[in-house]
Length: 244
Image (cartoon, rainbow, N blue to C red):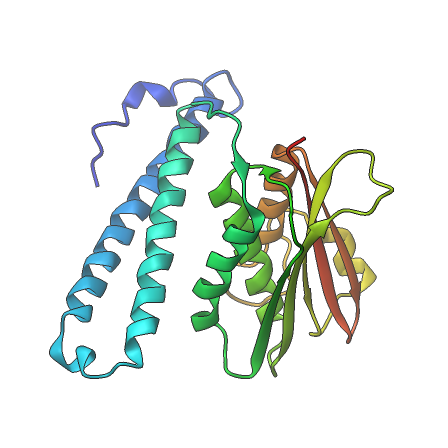
């Protein structure tokens, strides 16, 4: 598909020359732009589906369609954010309410979990705002939740806990822990867990989620940590700087 916003001259220069950065940047923006088009098509289809009388006569489908529409709206927001970054626009520092973000994620993700997977959200009282992008935080937690779900093919339990980091921390920070009681990881897998495109899955989109979460954490001035025991589950801790 021809896109008038992408010009031929941005690809000048050899692959490792001065033009390569712009080439990769525009290529990424083009892919994301096309994803945005597909999201619009899917959103339109869902809107038509929601108006179908047979769907309206089945109340149980309402929350499922609403969850799918919310997911597509968030995907559209991510597309816009990615294109903005590709243009090298620098957003102002943003502070985010962790409890509100996680409550939205809990509502969104429940429709994507099987009936044999339990989910519990616990948020500490009077948490300070954290210094990060709101959509970035929600996308990071979604990645962790879907990893936890995939680690429990026979069902299990996922918990999300948010609270102040331990008193030993050098600065005011908030910890967000996503824990599951799934298959866990070997020590060899944990060493490579954040390597781009490393995956133990034979299919799907493995090898992208955790590196993206790590990039988000470090870009926000925070960190990420994994604790896992083979056969007993995994806990991932996302630590973000709090507003002083």
